Image (cartoon, rainbow, N blue to C red; front, side, top):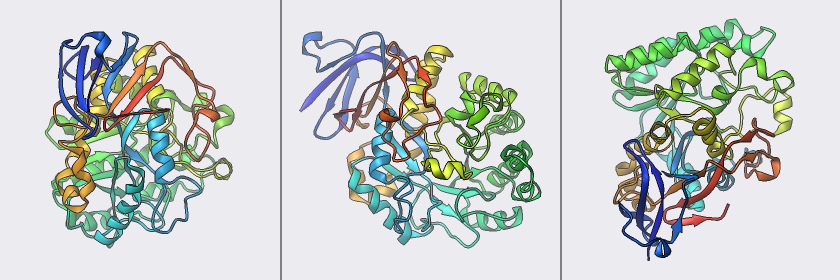
Length: 425
């Protein structure tokens, strides 16, 4: 069945009213064009208060489900898919720091099989550890340069370099915190002092050197500091294939705003100073940071009270984007790049290999992130004039809390389409 959606479409090339024709059965876009179908015959019509984006993607989440099933009380792929769609996210990439981490063909396939029950497009990182080797097919990898949450990490730079020598030319994302600095600071009185900016900047220098040495396609995760970001931007200018993420919480909050929320707002790397926050926000608004990624970490309130690091963020992704668009006047074309096109391109790198590994990936056509023929008919529709106050009863994550509780965003997720199907939120 062919359907037509009309509205103001935002992509990196244009922001203008268009009609998108798609096949509901295949879940793929047929074409995008001018207003050839009369309004009364359009199946889904959106006024000028709304923006239609190619389905937004989150390249950094922790759904917590693995073969062990130990952390199902935190989240599973089904609840993570609901939280994603609730926040306007139509595909997501799950991190490997599970009790049974995906580090080889067998463990990766076992975890991938767990995602298929949802019908939601989950992509998986494989873990890089001191004794691991690359998989036989193309996937993204994650390297924890120092201890965070889980047991998959390195104790020093030499150990990391030795392991990465086997991953030449691969896609590797880095959690940038230097293990030596973390060890030196582990007894400091606050979380911010135990994980200082210096740990991130030193690790950044190391990561950039290793990306160059081993010809990696690198991505630096959940970046937080004004000291390190210029180093990344300079490396990009020189042609180094490196990208960078930032989280909503690092753009929205700083240490001065946490007051009594410190336990609940604890994450790795920590929420930084006002100077860091303002620098990162301005850099993102100018298009100098590649991805908006939540680092969704659905720990329970009880675990947060005990000092567990990590914040849930999938449910609030779309609402936060309206804050960027309305309150911070971010160019919708740059939003499309950071939230739709680059996340789509990231996973599209692995589609050919994954289609050979799992037949259900054939349904994704040419891939994600673009409003073009043959790409998935997944759309994120944001209403910029309908405010949304974040409440527990609005959340789909099992964690049932958010760092944005009681925050009112200027807009909200109007509708979400997943592979040609309009989702009931």
